Image (cartoon, rainbow, N blue to C red; front, side, top):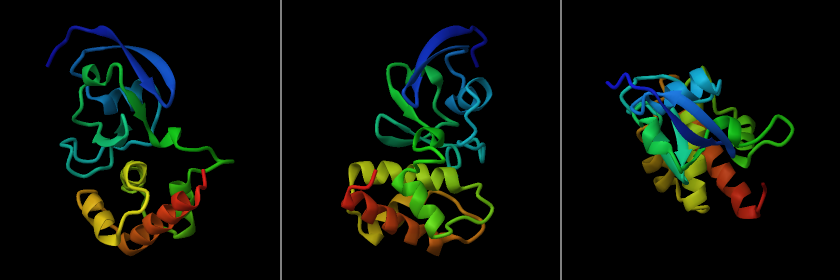
Length: 162
């Protein structure tokens, strides 16, 4: 692990941030500790559970295993960048309406992975949704509600809701 810090310019949720950190620092730590964006969660630290998922250049990515040096000149979106309390993103709205959370720990990963899927494929089938979410772990067993929320969100996207 490098101990040499450098300034790296990150674009997160449409805002530019100059971050002083070692280039191999995990994006998750910068998001949570430096930028105070707590949507992405620390789960496994190995990129396997999905709790830390963000969207980088339109693709769902595990921020716990991505060094910040790999995020310069790229567009990073966190849960906080999707919507606001007064204007929810369709994915957030669908998850609320379907009550697709119990403990909420996996919720960031489920929502961000869903958002990335719908950005690339606004009309996914249930099997495509299941395939996309298969590596986002949920220990509470909210899988049925999550699937319903994703399909509802896909309907919102298809209808043109923003």
